[in-house]
Image (cartoon, rainbow, N blue to C red; front, side, top):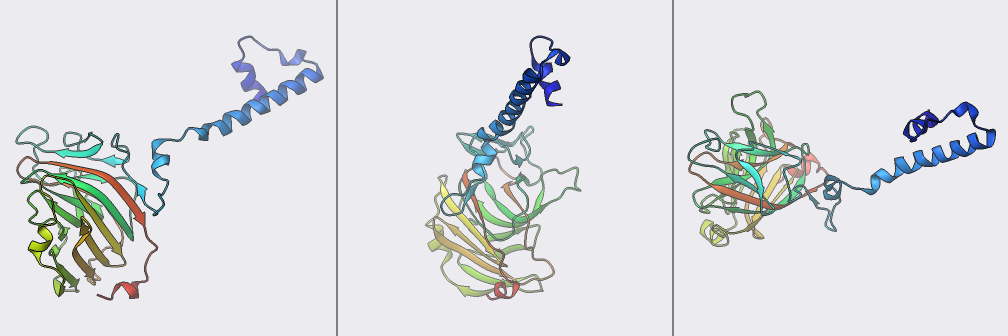
Length: 280
């Protein structure tokens, strides 16, 4: 089989029946060498996806390559890459006017326990956020790229930035400065006020870059903006809570807005025992 492939690649026709034993042995050796080089030279050229899958010294993996939307899916009228950033832009009319909340979905699979960090900037009046442990409404053909689940909220006026929100998933789950526990009645209950809302708000930049961090371990979710803890929630709502799901970035229906996200890094954590995660 190998000799036939080599024969087809030669510029002239080669009659194998006329070769001497020595010539046949030499051709066979060169054929094996050719096959070896062909097989093992391929991995020397790595794709950008492979490079991005290499964890850094802290165990984080970049899930956005800064060049294009490979590995992500969304409405191309809204989502693009601009200045090395994922960019979502909506308008007052045309294809990028929203009639419902749309999302740019990471197609890297579901994520369970994790830490995700990213930098985000948003125009005034805009509304966005990072979905996690979420799911796509694939049955809704009239409204593609619709996602439900937990959201690290972020808005252009820092009114809601840093709260834990449930997109079509029980609403506000923890306000800024709150530590909450959600019971089987699906309602969050404040168990601690660890900071004042306005004190946290002063740490959030308007129309500038902010560093966001979300940690979900077991059923405890902690959010930070610019290294300041903004909300903590333990979800003990056993009938509704989610242990895993997809990641996605939101473009919210409403006035025209522009959101940009960059430096998106994900670190998967060992799955925590359920008994440990029930502790508020």
